Image (tube, rainbow, N blue to C red; front, side, top):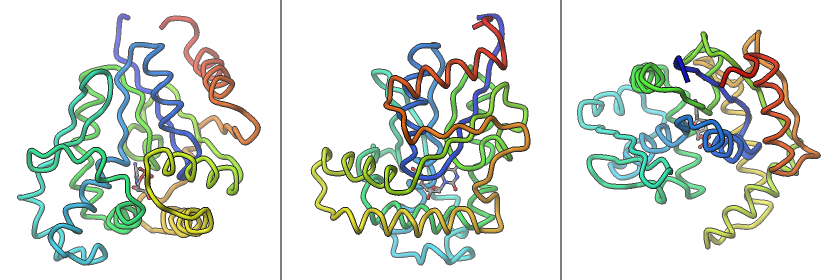
Length: 227
Ligand code: DC
């Protein structure tokens, strides 16, 4: 590979961004960056320290102490908060709601911007999130905006949480998802929306293998077979 490539994947929760991005990263030999994990970690910090996740001033006063590090171990991204691996802990339904709340704060987004851009400046990445194509990597080589119908997404997320041993009801997952979609797409700071040059990709009817194949086609159409 002669140069660094940037692939941006955005879309709502439960649409399969991380499954797709992980699969593609493995095939292409790129680093997969899950940016949601970074917001989740800031949310976890707020949880630990009993800070209201809507309190921008209160939370930003702590930025000097919020030490977040991403590491890739055995091919998987791990996120560390002040030296502790919190990769599992950030996945609870409560952490999801905290992440959605803190991610609406402009100061939090500004705080995390350089970290995300700096990773993408060093190596070829597939980065997933909500504003990768619009704000973080506006110069990405390929931008994919994923969607799928709400109930299918909630079913996928429910299955994932059950497999992790968490006790949740389907209705709870669906209503949390609706709430987060609403928060993430109506906030004023970097709302979830497709970049003008994003390729729209609905995978409601596709399984994982089909989703990866379809995305590979989009990538090849954009940048040819040079990878
Ligand atoms: O992708 P996820 O569900 O792990 O993300 C958790 C929350 O973080 C999500 O509700 C919105 C926010 N987020 C964001 O605002 N921007 C990103 N690039 C990634 C996530």
